[in-house]
Image 1 (tube, rainbow, N blue to C red):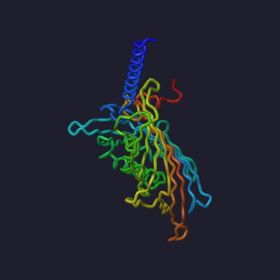
Image 2 (image 1 turned 60 degrees about the vertical axis):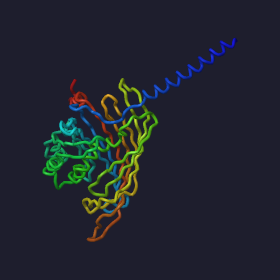
Image 3 (image 1 turned 120 degrees about the vertical axis):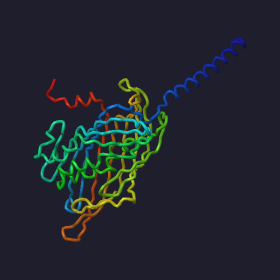
Amino acid sequence: MSKAAKNLGAVCVIVLTALLIVGQAKGDEQEAVMLSRHTPAGEVRFVEMNDDIETSSRGGFYGEEGVTRKSSRLRTVKREFDKGASDGASRVTLTFDRVAMFTETAQAPAQFDSDVDDPTDDINPLAAALGPMLGQSLQFTLNDKGRVVESKGVDELYAAVEESAAGGMIFVQLEEELADARLRFYWDDSHACLYPNKKVKVGDTWEATSVQPSLYQKDILRTYQCKVEFIGEREGRPVVDIAYDVKLKEMDDNKGKARMFGISMSLKDGQASGKATYDVKDGEFVTQTEELTMNLAGTTDGTKPGDKEDVAANIKTVHTMTVVSEAARAAQRKPKNSD
């Protein structure tokens, strides 16, 4: 091979290597996705939240062998975003469109689903408690990170349920859900906290925090370790999949109060892990699944006045969040026996 040919070959190798490097850099740049919430104003979506809960309690009136009960709660809201004309704040209205619940009681299982059952059925205690939630609205004002800074409609929602269900065991189960801080966390912060609000690539990690409020025990600080696992297309739509682990720590600035029967509990230990999918075109996380385990310890009133007995509880929760279109929600309402 001539010297000129060798030099030409060397030049070609250098150029090809440079092109590969530039191409890789462009590919990396194309993979980066801005992971922040930017749902357009006026966009209507339905958000479905479901919790499957298994609670094992021991001690006190639960006995040494203990009692294990299962329950589930489904809530669907119609969500409408609006941009403030003067201050630029993002405002969202959540109107309860479906409420469903299943719970095991000492007497017999009870269940209700407003898509199927009559919400005015006075015989069903779940209908009496949940029915008044339908049509009630919450209004959240969000900052530029998507966190709630102001809420309205909480008092009206609480009053509607209290008027119908106060004094019953179902209301005791719902009371914490209807607290302002809990509603903010459940309907916004539990997924808004996952946004890093920056461009990300596969393998990128970040830390986030949120506070899980409680009416009956101290609030819990949740520290998330998040990681991007996938960026690409699924069913023709560009998506980002993330996974996260959560460490739970009881906070010291909330004393809480005892539950019915004098039960006072605190977090002994717990953890959570989850996955969420971000739809690039929709500009938000459209699905989230989280598995949460909490071990609680505390005391309850004994059989004699002034006595206290040790109690313990293990709570396992599978939480799912799904955002669906108006058409998808309409299909859910369609009678099961219709064509």
